[in-house]
Amino acid sequence: MFAELSWIFALGPAALAGVGFAAAAAASGRAVADRATLAAAFALACAVAAAATVAFTGARHADILTLKGAGISFTFDALSVAMFVLVGFVGLVVVRFSRNYLDGDPQHARFVRRLCLTVASVQFLVVSGNLVQLLGAWIATSLLLNKLLLFYAERPAARLAARKKFIVSRLSDAALGLAALLLFANFGSFDVQAIAVAAKAAAAGDATTSLHVATLLVVVAALLKSAQFPLHGWILEVMETPTPVSALLHAGIVNAGGFLVLRLSDAMALSGTALDALAIVGAVTALFGSLVMLTQTSVKVSLAYSTVAQMGFMLLQCGLGAFSAALLHIVAHSLYKAHAFLSSGSVIDLLRASWSPSPGGQPHPARNAIALIGVLGAAFAVAALFGASIGDKPGVFALGAIMLLGVALYVSNAIDERPNMYVLGIAAATAAAVAALYFALQAGAEALLRGAVAPTQALGGPFDLVLVGFVILAFAAVTLLQGELGRRTNGPFWQAIYVHLSNGLYVNSRANRLAIRLWPQGDSK
Image (tube, helix red, strand yellow):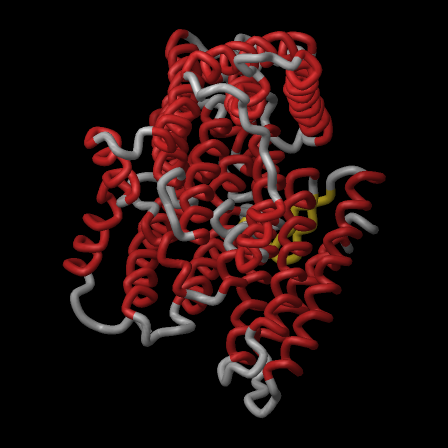
């Protein structure tokens, strides 16, 4: 009986949608925000209740009105409830933040209502039990985000961002719609659980041409949704909207591409071609976003490029078959980045409060090289202890090695011309502890998500090995470049690199010209 009633958890997002649709033009913005905060708190409570139910009684699937799997249905498993709670928590924080942030703005109430509708659509997306319902929520999320992008419709940059996002989103919608039809043709149902069961029973060699096409279309939809290179430019102009929108992006909107791949991970695992395409674009985007981020002077634009890079990392993990690691990445990045945007106004205070050790001698590239070799050695050693070697879990290992490269700068500062062994020992212990914590969290995520996503894939062949090696070496070079850009600002070569990178290699400028050519008139209202 309880299984049939598990749909009641969806009352949370329904309450948010109710606030969004309420026609209360006379109500003040603060009054609407108060009601929205209560609805968001109720939605989070429903998400937590769903997570507790799954934890104690197992996954739940509720069909309300379906035919061939299509219609209204909800799936509550480890994957969906993790995203459900994440979206509910960030949504509540953003709605509550908006209560004071826009207080006094004549359009405050309208903004909060649109915010509620957007959060509700994302929550319906992550608990959708079939592809038709998921596609509907997918489209609704992008349309509502466009409305938020045009909150200050008089700003030319906001209108341009909305145009670019609209074009990219419609391409993504079309790709997902075609993918859903092809998946139905292969598995005979739109139901996500039925597709997962059938895909688990199949072998990779049994994949038909239409299934390969379907998974490639899923890749296209995910890449477009998650602001991947070269169609990432719209996320940079999100800065033209109120800050809460930038934070809300990380509550399952820009992450929706990764969620889609995870929801269909059992089917995706049948197509090595689709996973390779995902890994390549993800790796290129991660490298591009990380390089450009180093040269940005605007805090919010730097955070936006960081998001582009992090979404690339997440999809790279999916492409390498580290599905549970990708979900852990989504959760960690969403919480961190939403906080970073909401607190971006305090960046000066944060910088003044921060401190990093300085070497006693003159900076030397050899110090950084020694630190890089040391932390990569720690990554290999600790990964082997947790059974996450490059052969067993290439996606988990690759991101762990790249993450530890961030610790390399801390270690290099401890290597001095007059070494202090105590400081050096503390730095080495910190690197080892970070590595152990990372791989332990990955093991925990894999255990929690067992059955909800496809198992972590082993190294698929020489191509995957080359890709992992290239990505790690490329980010080692980025780590070295970060130090060199700060020291070699007078040389023409380094100045040219800095200028080109600070302009994003002019990719977004070309995208702007193309968007204006495709949509030359109108204000996108």
